[in-house]
Length: 178
View 1 (tube, rainbow, N blue to C red):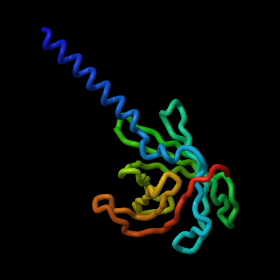
View 2: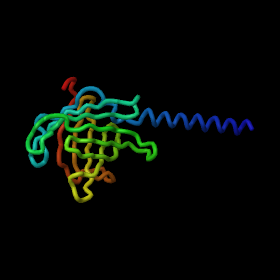
View 3: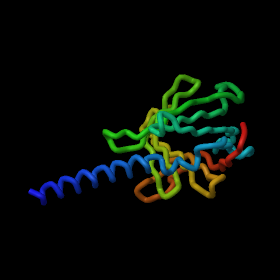
View 4: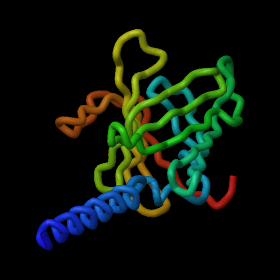
């Protein structure tokens, strides 16, 4: 009987430890992004030459259960007007045991997908909403140092760990103010 009680206590302790480890490390790749404003390089352009300018803020919310994002960028479909472009939520889906995100933009669109970490690098994968095919895009935040990330948008082959096509390459740097 003592053996059974010991095994039950060890199982409960082990389960509690693993659950707390998952919770503690849920947003490990995003911890460095929290605080400050992340600004894209001033000379950034899409592959077609269209200017790219974004300022992004990451904040923890709901006692660390989610991360909220707020992005300023181009809010005009005809020209170039800078303003609040989208707001997003990053969360851990306990049922599916995956990190997910939802981003709502000023044009009335929703982008959603999954998030993966590779060391300090962050990969957002999602179906491109402007595409009639099943084009899956990936945004990669490649960690350079605590104040710098290389940012790439394109088609990424996760299995072979290589980019098949790139639409944007730039850098984001931390700034203390907007």
